[in-house]
Figure 1 (cartoon, rainbow, N blue to C red):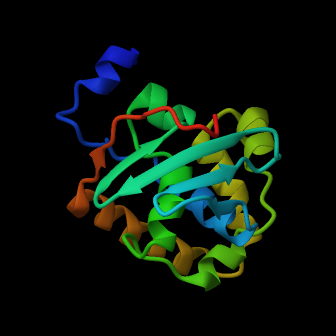
Figure 2 (cartoon, helix red, strand yellow; figure 1 turned 90 degrees about the vertical axis):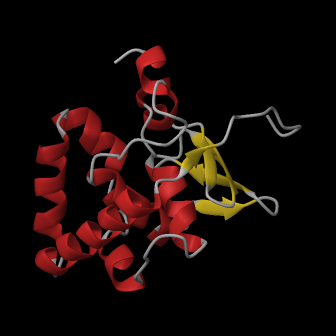
Length: 157
């Protein structure tokens, strides 16, 4: 999908692949989400090699992750922040199940989200409960329809 096609969306984020909700929970559990100002956050990738800038103002969101920038869907860094802000459901028990998952390595190694998710679900204690919770978050994303906030330069980057 071209960048132009990703932007032809009426100003709203597209729905992400469900695995991005799992990744968001893992980022929270791993302590990789940090607030830097009233409406700005930094989210560190699972291998520590990248950082993403997220801004949330009301129901408008911007994020510098690849899914958000190039594919037009709300990426895991923004989903994690929205969970921490109470704009999306969050349950610590499900986040803790996803602590320590090497998301980037598995995504690069397996190259398919369905295979990564299969591996993840084999590691957790309650895969059915986790899947049900992720479905709830996904349904909330469908109902809320977060707006795209135009990115602006900050003095930090």
